[in-house]
Image (cartoon, rainbow over all chains, first blue to last red; front, side, top):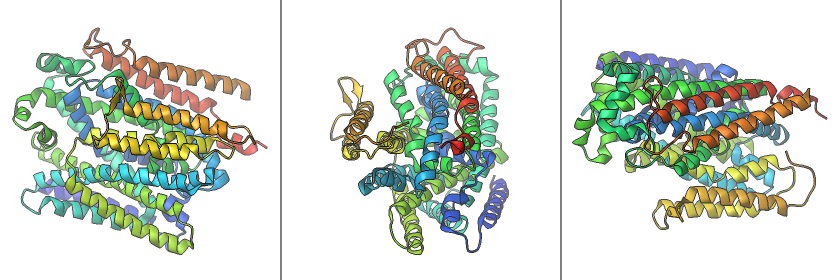
Length: 476
Length: 76
């Protein structure tokens, strides 16, 4: 397998080098570096948006979600993604219109300008930092675990993590956002290919679709319906997840940026449709992989403590039970997925930081680059500390950033100078959510999830803020 | 023409919202029930799969009626 890893690894590295050199332009402007000249066409747009959205979380998290919680995982991600792409049509139009009026230096900077209040930007940046860094950290950790399994005893796990972060930093430093977009495109194609090959192998092991569900019915019938064996998939869970996922283009800066840098509104519209189709294509094989784990690996995984089952499942299904060439391709695909997503998120944090700085552009750029370096270091540190389920951590990340949705939407939609009430309400919402995550306060009240309550409260606060604002012109 | 498109866009929004709400009801997620199956696929999976395809299709239709850059630029 090592030979295959070397072959695919070299091809992937070659493509990355080619892409970064193609993106490098002497004397490029800050806009070129941070926003890829705002000229991304439909095809690149689809792949970069999809790659930033479908990361290691889809590669590793979704098969594990299907394995543990059953078919409801489709509703959790695919139906929510369907709603999200529809929402992009509406939101994309409004944010692009606003960007034409105010310019774009990251979501935090844009919203600061919309409200005429720097605290709005600070809170958005803080939220992105709090929820993106652990997510990036766990992706780095996921890759290092896999590399450790493929090359046992070669270097310690943290060595792989450091290597990944160095590649990421060098790559984004040379090529900027355009290089990241190209690497996303490579990853998007690789992700789809690998998941379908492994998914097909898993489905073949059952002997077809019908045989697969018959087998699962015998092994664990609760996987075939909601709420699933552990009772996770309640209607409330789905509603809260859908809100969190629909808010992704609003509140996850790496994805908002991708809507803004599309060449035209038409390209962005077509991109939304294609991302929806991509979501269906990429999530479908994860059903087969998850069901394979639930049936064929049921007994062997049962020997591990629950916390270690996910990693054992990944190694077994992606590496040990595949032909060498496929396992090697899966490994390179995983590296690509992790690298492009972490790159996109760390770069987006840098971009958000840039939007908050008001000084000479050369100095802003220098501080932004130092910021990107520091964010990567913190994510690296987290990768050694976090031990959690990747899909659940991703969901918490989406839910946490979604809390900023009402404030961002109001800032973008309103043509009035909006009351600052929503800004402080959002900060309070963030603090309450963090307290619930740390277990200081409960996560349910009167049988309702706290994230749902908070979102409803902040949406109401946004409405009140709007009503408290002096009238000038009409909103959309 | 513009009014007609706006009306169509509103209808699409209503259908999309309706489909999303339907997903959270026992019509799509009956507790502990996996029949009737379609080609062996459990009930909640095939119904939610169809809803996902419908949402993507609605998005496509939305691109035909939603405002674009060009229209925005000619507005006063």
